Image (cartoon, rainbow, N blue to C red; front, side, top):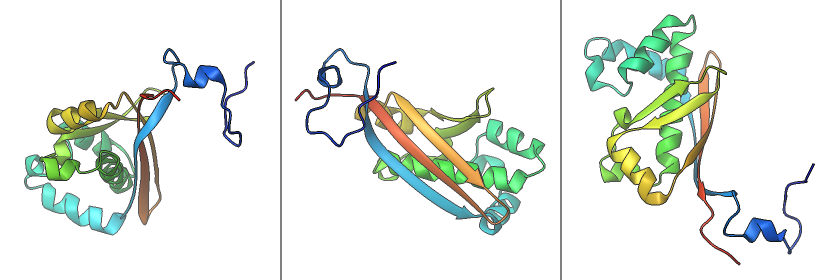
Amino acid sequence: MKAGYLGGNDNPPQDLLSSTSNYLEVIGHGIDIVETKGVQKLIAQLSEAPEMGCFTANERNVCELGSKRIEYFAGRLAAKQAVLKALGEALNEGASWLDIEIKRLSTGEPSVVLYDNCLQIAMDLGVTKWLLSISHESSYAAASAIALGQCSQKS
């Protein structure tokens, strides 16, 4: 088993610097925390006009099924905000909340799916993979999103 490079050394292994390596670099990182009380009010307002909100139809359907629906909505909202922060000025570029969908894989792990403006911004930045973590409890939800892309420089 080959050990990974963890830093602490001015001379990383040559394969880390190789143009043919499969290493990814961090393009952006966003983190966010939301209070569930605020999300509960938002959900109440959106129930009258869900298409005007920040959750896709799929997200609404998934969150409505759970016993912790407000925590699930709050977690997805925190995740969307973290993704936007990882993309930098995405909101200034005309991105919509609906351009980001947070899905759950069969493993239970959250994943990011981008559409329209957010997808274009991510492609322009070279994002090829997302690492997403969501945590929630009764009062707060937090999320961290890391945008990764192929290493672009050789030393």
